[in-house]
Image (cartoon, rainbow, N blue to C red; front, top):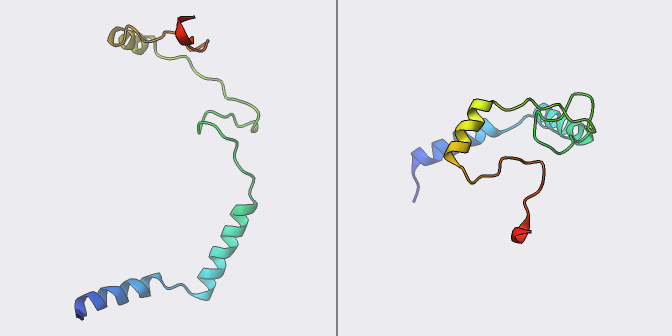
Length: 90
């Protein structure tokens, strides 16, 4: 079943996505350039310092008012993240 409206939309979509030889070349250059770029170190974005992959940025302390409010809402939650939770009540 032929629908001239669908054919027109497909033709318009195809023409909008056609790329000239210059556009194809520019995309290939950009892709190869990005492939050669150094990979970012894993971590939370913004947590790493600007001094390189090995340095961590200093973290600011949390708002004590917020922490107090969360402790009231979740009284059984751990209050410190400095040590890992103990398994099996040890």
